[in-house]
Every structure is written in structure tokens, then in C-alpha cells.
Image 1: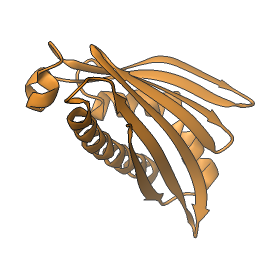
Image 2: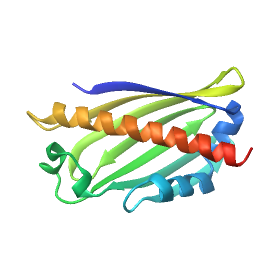
Image 3: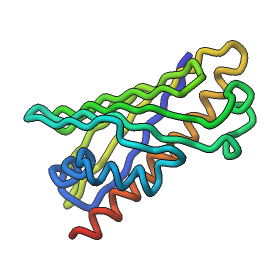
Image 4: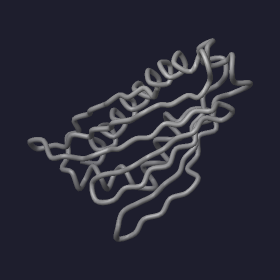
Length: 162
């Protein structure tokens, strides 16, 4: 059974500003360079009147991985993520190299006072008998930390450009 979780972040800017930042190619490239990990890169980025779509790769050096992950993965961890924004909502998915795992997510930007709330709900599914649940727990923990770091990066980015 998949593991579900939510992450919320309060951002000090209006919804339109936060949205424009989250889908901006320069922002995504800088975020990946600064906090994306080993081999991080923006693989694809497209915008249209309907929204934005981007794919990116993030990496974690094998020596930083918990033992339960190292037991099923040979080498570094590479995560490929895709997000599709329509209006102020997105759907996303991520896969992990060498692991039968998938992360699905939905994000929403909502006005909150003078700022914006970013809410992400996600589901992690690891299809490995016996240890899949343990791996899901680790993935949820790591993704939650990543989402918090990404929210802090957005705050910093916005503050530097205010």
C-alpha cells in the first residue's frame, strides 16, 4: 500500500509571483545547481498560455544513502521528476533509477494573507516485497526534507529580488 504525505509552506509573495518563480527556467536551473545534488540538471522546460511543464534530474551520492536504499541500489541515486502546472495547480511524478518506485504528487498555490501557501500532497509506492514499506518510509522522509529545502530556496530567491 502506498505511503501518503503532505507538505505545506508559507511563502512571502502573492500567488502569481510564486507561480512565476516556480516555473521560471533560470530559477529552476539555479535551484538545481545549488541544492539539486550530484548530477542535477534541467532536462526539459516548456511554457505556454496553459501553464508550464518541466523535467529535471536530481542526484544523491551513494555514500549519503541509508543502508536500506543501498541494499537495492547499486551506485548513486538519480531521481527524475516531472511537473505539469495548469493555472495554480500541478501534477507531478518522479522515478528512481534502479528501484521499482514511483512518486506522484499534486501541488496547489493558495493566497494566504499577503503571501501564498504551497501545499503538496504526494504518494510514494515502492514495489519490492518485504522491504518496500521501509524504503517508502525513507523516501517520504527524504522528499519531505527536499520540499522544505526547496521552499526555503524560493523564499531566499524572492527576498533577493524584492
